[in-house]
Length: 584
Ligand SMILES: Cc1ncc(C[n+]2csc(CCOP(=O)(O)OP(=O)(O)O)c2C)c(N)n1
Ligand SMILES: CC(=O)[C@@H](O)[C@H](O)COP(=O)(O)O
Ligand SMILES: [Mg+2]
Image (cartoon, rainbow, N blue to C red):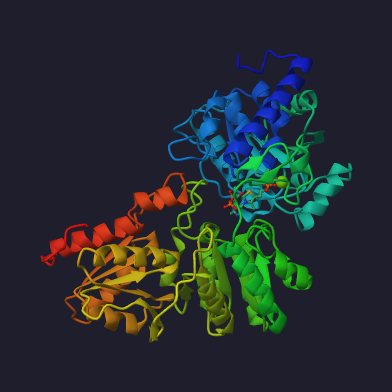
């Protein structure tokens, strides 16, 4: 018997209140997902009273709403270091507990996992084990959910319980026909789409009444076939600052719990610079429209939406649809800007390749949270796009080093009518302006040392670290020229020519080394017969854990000290480290 099974109704109410207070206390201190977890307190308590985790398998779609599950499975102590390096993950983590299954924080996957796990139990003769998938109304707007529902509807003997956590919103209110249907169901209207597809339907259920939830879950558990339990909840329940917040405090930084106000954050971010500039562009370019996958606020489309509400399209958590709908818009004379987090574009690679690039369509992808993001861990770092997308024929990828460069690259991107363009930047405050001393071809020279035998190629936001590294190296007698390629794909011939004039070129990139600019530069130098040694300071093809962006970048040598050390090491290996002045 687990900790919650034996509790009576009064004790259950007390437990729910205690958990809510605990969540506000811990998440306001560490940052994390607050509104979503406040909304699933009773739901998760009821789950653990009815189902025997881990014998029965509990799956959380997206996983950002699994904090209560972690409390109920013995991990309350982990919240003091939530999402910190070496601390507890903000998502289910298999190494943390046998109760955790899905580590991927990308939405709309849990029903497919459920279909697979349940079919595997049947094949293995373990058909008595129930499979429960908790999915939000936002995640349910994702196409994979409907692929899974289609299969579940064809498998009447699978004991899968789909717990639909319907709070009516992702960050913003959930959009589309599904939202209208769920509204109908909430008001008791007609048969559900789920029943029409072959699943059973239980609900709507008050998602904050543990007894009602238990009854519904027991009914569902006993029907031995795929069933949807439609739970109606409130995001942010029990904490007024969350309940009154425009995004219900979906994802927060450190807060003052008494007021809900952010503590210590502020300053210009890449996102805010984008938001201002795209709104300015929209004023002079009526053909520019913007698309978001349920994240208008987080990607910075607020200013554009305020000025041009008819030119912003929130498609729900449906990146594949966003990209191909944008292709349709581009085919029809518009210039769409698809604003998504870098890592979420991964699931729409085919759409970028075959719906946009194959047709040479002018779609601009603005990828926020590119590179190491930090606290959201392995399935959130935007470390793949700049290494995967360069294979797309005709694509151009730009990485700004400062706010002015972002504005310029964005304008160049929306001016380009020949094919897909990408502008990518990290989850960080925008650093100080980094002026160029001159431009050669498309390449900005940031620091020129006439006798330099070393060329540092600083990509995007890491250009500042490269300048600091060059200072450190100069103090030790190693002269370095530093450049910013601006557009990292396609490779600028001026960059190749510049690199060929040096003994060593090191590209510094917030992306996976395989497919990086440094790798492509090495290939181009070899093809040109150059004996320049080309190298890259980048990320490994690995799943990088959570931590702060600064810590993780430093750990991978992507800060000034690490870059300087890498240059010295490579010079050493080339026998070029003569006459080195000792560190002062
Ligand atoms: C593929 C993908 N796109 C976007 C996101 C960002 N994201 C995280 S949670 C969320 C909203 C989820 O809404 P819902 O499923 O209703 O859960 P709730 O927070 O309301 O409980 C979004 C858009 C994501 N995790 N995965
Ligand atoms: C779970 C999810 O994908 C988002 O909520 C994400 O965690 C938000 O990330 P930011 O906090 O970087 O906006
Ligand atoms: Mg929701």
